[in-house]
Amino acid sequence: MPTGARLVAALGLAFLGLIVSGQVVLLYPEGTDFGWFTTINTALGLLVGWQTLGPRAGRGAAVAITNGITGAVVLLFWALFVQAVNEMVRLAMANRYDSPLEALVAVFEIGVGFFLRIATPGILVTLAIGGVIVSLAAEAAARRWR
Image (tube, rainbow, N blue to C red; front, side, top):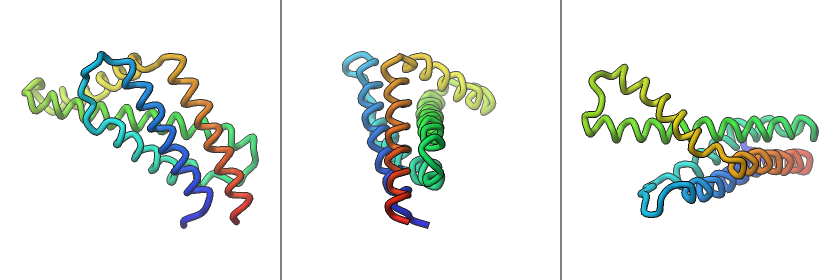
């Protein structure tokens, strides 16, 4: 059911996904082709905010803080997973893998590699603080629009 809290959480996490995607782009060499990277991460922020963060709003500020961190972690997980699957498919089309199992294992290896590359204090702090701010905004929306 659509609520104000879901809308605020979805738009907030979409914006957070956009900001963090911009930070990640800066970590890679100039000229790297990112394709739909930012758009996909923004869309994932929209979905995670709507499905994960929005429904949990309205339980108090202390719960909102933990929900914000949870929302940021869920967004990070799905973004890493989707981007790793995308990279695996790209490599599979270049005949890099001998079996489907090898390609499936590669998704997790690629995802861990991506995480280690982007696990800088700036990105992790942005995710944590941004998630808490979005969650507190969703909490305020839940109290205001019942």
